Image (tube, rainbow, N blue to C red; front, side, top):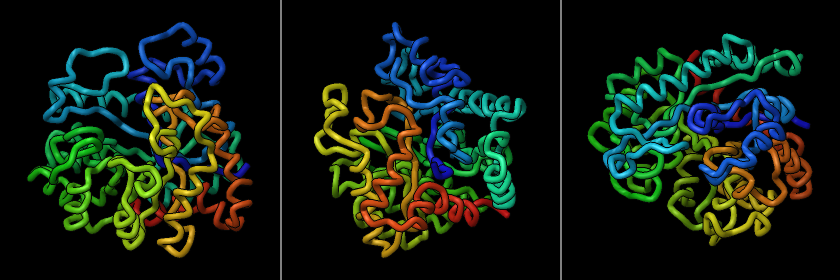
Length: 361
């Protein structure tokens, strides 16, 4: 199996919101949850820390996720798994708690924060030399910017180790419109992007609504990625990138991480009804192919699996039981005509190149 670099894993969400012990194996965690019914993905997890080790994930982008947008009040009334909070102060505190979880993992030697391009290079070399005894590298990202209480706080979060931010998630944030809505950046959102440029924060365009996306393109001129995104031309819906968005991202030297949430891979998927049997892993190559056709090469596609990001095997392709099954793509890509160098790029090389430039020196 090749090494793997995954650009989107909600590890703290699973630990803090879903109360999952990520030191268990996948099989052990499923057994713990076999009688749980509070959220749909119980007993269906695809990853834990031991599974990420088995999968040969040398680096991942791990998230902080807490929403407190203008519409959050309609979702108050906490239940297990909720990510909506009554104020930005509470969202900040939850995100800070997630950061504390990651910091404890690092202090115990299970992960290693990577904040500069030099740290990334040194870590990857160490991991390749001795993957069994080298902790997984983590680049810290924020999905939805509500925990940044005001734009002036961007520097504070950057100093804490945050390196990439998506201004919105689902619905509206205080900075932008996200999935299932459409509208512009707010005045605070415009200032947020300007603060990103001042400190060197990477922009993650994932989840930005169309109008907010294009406004961001007109303002932000720093490094950007789409950490976990598929294509609207193949699977309609505003959660996906349009062809024009893909072309713009390619022009800006961005990389697009393919997401393995089955409803983003198969048209007409109805969440809670459609069964995984309708789509296999190979469908993701169609999305990759389209990006490669626009780019003229395979340097702008990679992996941002989003596995266990609020769903489990009830909403993954039929041939994905754990994250390690992503490696089935190696042979599938080869059969589709991708070279060994291209497959290396998709599994790890393209993200190494991107973050090797986008992270601060």
